[in-house]
Length: 272
Image 1: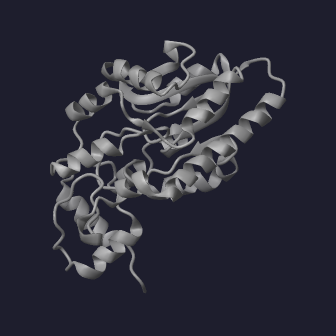
Image 2: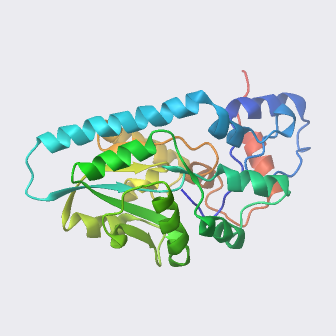
């Protein structure tokens, strides 16, 4: 999912390696998906693009989602069934944009992001096309609730059509207007449809109980919602960016990369 800030997505193992090799306070500036350990490789994007394990995680998520759809279809409902899905890093892979920016020594910005989405060429995650097509074939309405903006609608529609993602109605693509929270948009859908599944890479794709919360609050909300994961909430892994990172920085989007480096370096745990 596209966030206001697309920054570093370092893995814990890589950060631990960094802690072993870099002196305190001596971290270098970084760019999206760059990894401070492992000789500065763009480690998160490498994993997302190349790891069969990542493909397996996606397939696992979509297989569970299909199972839940079949269960919902077996139940009688007076309302049309619907699924609500995020787009970015939920079924479209934008790591290519992040890598391109990183190789230029630059990070996310709205202008270049919109240039990327206008192309409509982000590739589908493994298993995603089959799942969404299956849902549509079964008569389930597929709603794409994204924080892409209205100016990105044309490119997004182009991308959906390029890879045959179902679009029963162009109004089923619901972009961001004034607020980043998706709660109002989800509630509007629920007025006319029975939402049986929500898919996303970010907790805020599921409920407002996760919106703009601290790390501790997010963790607590996850534990309190444990029964929903794998049943109504289907989450796709995203190690590149997300509210998991923003919450650590207390949603301070004006922090410099150097400050974020320093904060992350101090927070990551090493062996006792």
